[in-house]
Length: 249
Image (cartoon, rainbow, N blue to C red; front, side, top):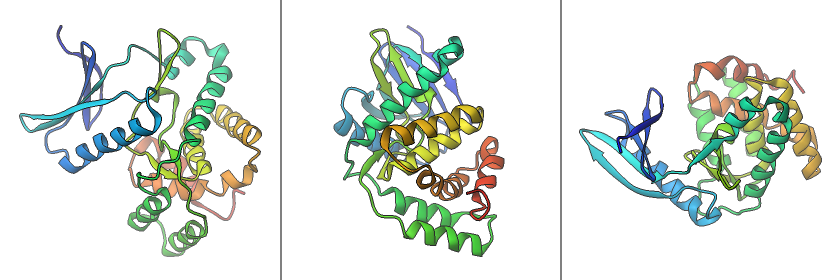
């Protein structure tokens, strides 16, 4: 069976070959980042179990590093939402329930989200020093948490197999931290394409967890600033609009 291309970006191509997925990075992609990706996935496997497709190995061919992972046959939640738009909120609630299930796990061996964000904001160019200082002071004031945070939780990272089981992929940004920070990141992801869905998701999270909405909103400027360091053009305008920490709450 020839390899089947599943997706491609500027940094990597993802292929299927039988019951395996090959995540092939472009030539020159940092070796440490490849191993870190596999390392985080492996640690999350130990925490969550069957919901996480396992890393099977790492190889290098022609200067290109590749992570080999279990293949899961199915459709993403994003695919299902496109096929059945009338079920959008049903699928969003399914996504949220999965996210809340992850937050029940403790991830003591993963990097601390708060410390990661502090470094990201320190490294961020393009914001003035007073804004950077205020963001850092806000971040310094939040307590350390150990909940499992995916860091990029979205419908396209959830696969539903033929038996209706859920599998969560793309764990490279996973940390231990505050659930509301993880929710703030998902809110910003949803807001890129559907603000109504993003607001519904946030309201539903607050309802299910008895969390004050402002508590999540307080995370938005910090999460937006940290996310800007990834330099994704499609996110820049929205993220910059949330960094003004004085006006939007």
